[in-house]
Structures are given as structure tokens and as C-alpha cells.
Length: 110
Length: 117
Image 1 (cartoon, each protein chain N blue to C red):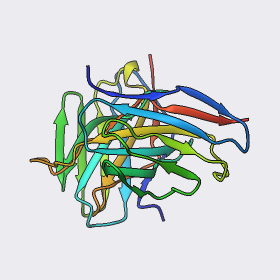
Image 2 (cartoon, rainbow over the protein chains, first blue to last red; image 1 turned 90 degrees about the horizontal axis):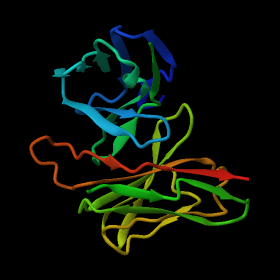
Image 3 (tube, chains in turn cyan, red; image 1 turned 90 degrees about the vertical axis):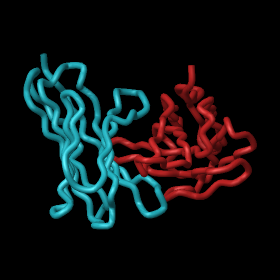
Image 4 (cartoon, rainbow over the protein chains, first blue to last red; image 1 turned 135 degrees about the horizontal axis):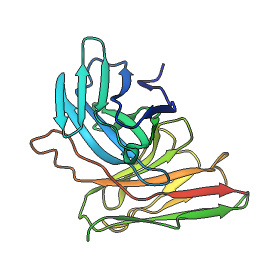
């Protein structure tokens, strides 16, 4: 079993829809959770990070962590074609190294 | 204009050849990392370095080598011992100080796509 599981998609939604991207993780000791966005043929860039449980909001983006179910989510409101990218979830192990999900390819159709 | 540069953007290698991928950063970061990315898989750590002249193996170090002679530079050599080197290679850097957040953001370069012919 991978430590972080993420459906690679692709996920295709119409412009303006609410997008929900999800990951599960196996180790209850993980405390930090990150979402990176990667455009085609580019390096990933940090979108949001959260510590422990709860929600964090930044503009149209909301990151949510549910430690009881080991489930992390990223919601995108009013999705735009420019949001089309691969979204990678990650967590940090006890050696401060990142453990990555496979990434979900998101396509926003105009 | 700070950032991480990787070169070349595309690289073609014949079987049996060693190739070296360049990574340079001017962010004054102590830590540097090399990842490999394959379709449908997450990033996998090859090597990382937290200080000049020192580096540690990641999860998939076999067939790769690195050096860290300068703080700004962390080149990766893909040797002929790497059985399946065709992939997208990403270099990243970060500070070591986790500060108030407890997390060191990793900043990535644009990547090098290596293809074995």
C-alpha cells in the first residue's frame, strides 16, 4: 500500500463548477499536508499547506484535512480554464521528506 | 530575480551513456533535491543534500550519482546502470529553517525531460 493514494484522473469538469480533489494517507503520525499545482511540462508550485486537521481557505481554493479518516481534500470554486493542471498532494514524514501522491490531472472545459 | 534553473530542457541519451543534468539555484537555500516523475506516479526522491559536500540517497538512488561542491549547484548524473532512465527530472531547493509554519516549502525548477534512444 502506498503511503499517499491519489486518483490520477483525468477529471474533466465544465467551467464554473466546484472541483473536489482528494487523497488518502496511511500514517496517522503525518501532520503536514500540502497541495502543489503543476502545469504541463513545468515544475510543481506550492498552492496550499495545512497543519493537522481543519480547513484553510485562500481565494477560490480550500484545503481540508480529516485526520480521523486520513483524508485530505482540495476544493476549487468557480473553476477556470487556467486551473487546468495536475494537482499533487503531499505529506511530510518524520525526516521532513515529502511523500507524494500520484497527482490528479484536472481539465476545465470552457 | 531568484529561482532555480535546470538545463537542458530536453535531453536524449543513447543506451550505455552517462549524462549529467544541471541544477542551479540563487535562492541561498541550503537544501537541494532531485526527483524523478513518471506518468501516473508521484515524485520519487533520488538524492538530497542539506550542506555542501554531503548528500543522502533517496528512495530510488540506484543508477544515479550527485555532487554538491557549491551551495548553488547540485548536478545529477544518470549512469548507464540506470535501467529505465526515460523520465521527467525535477530539481528543488528549500531552506532548512522551518520557522513558524513547521514546513519548508520546496521550490522547483522547470525540469529536464530525458529520453533514452
